[in-house]
Amino acid sequence: MPGRPSILFVTDLAYQARGRRYCDEDILLTSRLRDAFDVALCHPRDAAALMDAFDAVVVRNSGPVLHYREEYDAFRARAAARGTRVYNPLHGRGDMAGKQYLLDLTADGYPVIPTVDRPEDLHVLPRAERYAVKPRDGADSIGLTFVPRDRLDGLPYGDILVQPGVDFRYEVSFYYVDDAFQYALHAPDTDRRWVLEPYEPTDADLAFARRFIDWNTLDHGIQRVDACRTRDGGLLLVELEDLNPYLSLDRVPDRTRDGFVTAMTASLRRFLDAAPRI
Image (cartoon, rainbow, N blue to C red; front, top):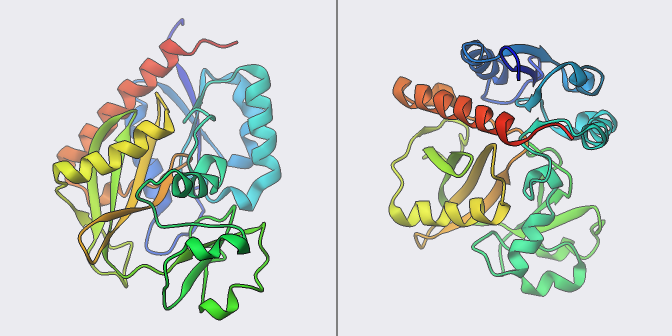
């Protein structure tokens, strides 16, 4: 590959998220990645039209896909047809493919918040004071509601998922580049879930998170395993984010942030070397 590799960095710098500034994170990342790559930024709606001029496309804080579903589907189809390198690779089994993985993991007995999508399966959910109802293709808690059990029968099944409300102590997230753990953060205040603090995981915590990294089989890319700590001390998976996980790099020490950027840069180099255009 002559010269420096070029990257089209897909981000929506104007996207607003409660308690988070996505744009700051991507400004930081692109400023650092320019040490190793030629980098240009674009909005997710423009990615399909621009990507042929670059060696790889990096999808980062581009906002929930449901806001630009048609453009995203066109991007995926064009990338597949042209053999475009996309980071994260588009065969992820987590949120990249919708919420089906929550059903699959429930059926396979993984430690995940039990999830169903059919009224005839409601009996497998544990009794709870209320139940979370979320769109099958939702993100960022968009469309999330809570209902009592007596309202579950009349829901629009097929388009939604149902989970029991879980009484948890806190939420914790584990951040990976490729299959290598980078850092963990947790939200000790359940009412302010985006006020995160560094978290020192135990060996058992890392074994829990690693099960889902292994299950996803992505050999390159950035992943975030979100979990909740239940009252009995166990962990349950909340989300496996492998499309455009927000990294909360403003919440980690400088050394950790530098280590993450170094790991991401090395991962991108390996990805470019291992994935020639088709």
